Image (cartoon, rainbow over all chains, first blue to last red):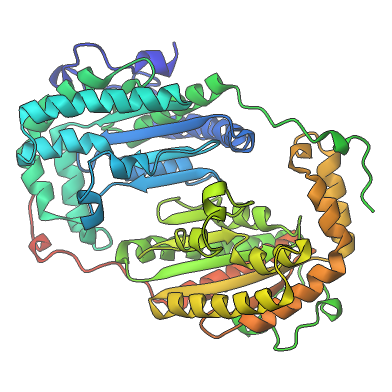
Length: 268
Length: 268
């Protein structure tokens, strides 16, 4: 069964009932899973230059998840071994003054992939219906309006040639504790710690409920959500690699046709 | 001797007298040179995340060179094994209508690195004083004005915190013939062929003379030009890796200081 079918968000997603340690694609040990991921990524590395040369498709991979759910780590595994030409990783932090002076989709729209590009969003416009609600800058009514706007925005992107895949990295609250603690205990990672990590952890159940709502409200065949169990890092990477590869294969990238002059041409 | 010293463009550059097959850094065989490059790049991969986390420096690597001089290949070797976060490869092609409606530095300025970023330009504003002159869209007087503008622009970038290194990939005319022919003979690379490649090759001597002029006019300690002999691909990659590593080391990147709350913190 394909990863895109296995991992697609169910219409009534219950994160509490969805085991973050589940291994739906491969229950092998970490080394075997890493090898398998490596092989899938080699295939991705073959297809992506064609995608880029062809300038016909645009691919947008959105990664969402709680703090320490592995968004950075997944990007490192997925794109750490690939030619950066045609690949972009975009990272949405707190809006700058100029960004905040515009609607919340403005800065996102500027960063969507162009023809031939494969763009990864590390966080995205979904923060504007998640953390914004928890912080109370957006109420339920406004959030409902935004969810409709996001559906419209993503449908427009899809209709104008963008292939969208959205991945929720699902970790357990225990796993998050371990990872945040490890970050604090590692002198090279301490700088990543932000007091808001603790404030957000305290709102764990609220975030989980909001994720369920938001995913249900914005899942669509042209902009599908996938729920990736992410307590195991190698299994998480395998799942995203499989989703990405299946998506790229579906686009059937090919080398562009050469210029007719090329035939039997001899350079002097 | 350091690569930055060995490869710095001489004040009176004569490309005709500069052997493109020279191996100033290492005259070992290709396998040994590849190993050495790999080691330098591992060190680059250690320093770059600190540069990115620190958000203090900005690094701009400009790659220029004739068609088939190896700009794409060098980017693949240098950044093909590195986490894309904080790295951007920008590719300047013929200006779009919007770009052409602005001054020639407009599109370049939009793409310079921000704090913590390492950005590679595959071609750059230098095309606007090279190919633009050969095509005749810019005359000698206008080119002189542009060279002064480019000096001013790069000095401003340097003064506002950008570390600039500019690399000219120097290949011989014979090597270019072989590479263009190989591109034409390889079904997977034929699509790269553009009739303008031949037109530009026919103007080889003009381009070489213009490169000498442009490099001499824009070399500066805050925006140095390096001439990398590029007939051997592994030796070319070694040279750029060494230049990049020396430049990054000079910035002494460090992990940012952690938030004071981190001390003895236990996550619950």
